[in-house]
Image (cartoon, rainbow, N blue to C red; front, side, top):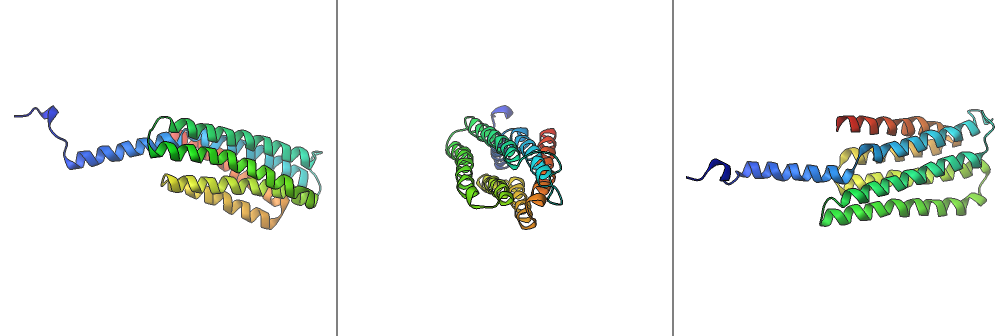
Length: 207
């Protein structure tokens, strides 16, 4: 009679083991929630608050800050956040092998490529637009890249929360564009900046 410790696993046990391994792999690929959300939240909260203070609710600046300075704060924060996101994703994929490694690596590089293309598009269009619209182009295009990449990440790993977060980014961005530069800055600072910080801390706490 075979020892109980050496018996073959039942189909139910095998299926449960496979599901646990898949869940663990997805968790490793997703990385630390603070790395995924906190850098973006801080960058948006600071950068878009600076833009709102420049625009003012009635078109008059609330503080003596130029649009170039405000956009500079935003772009610097987003470049740092994008680099942190790409690093976290590519680092997480080194823990697994096979197709998931390639998916994670390509997704990480997509962040760098998206941010670089955003910079080129905004820099090319800015001289052709009025001053207020210039800031809106830089802000909205960068958020579009982030939102679409979050949606793509959710689709790659079948992670609905990540997909819906990307959808939320795109929705807030689109609504802000329709309302104008000042409202766009305020909505993003509160709903996305503060929201991403809260989501990152909450997910890390749950984890």
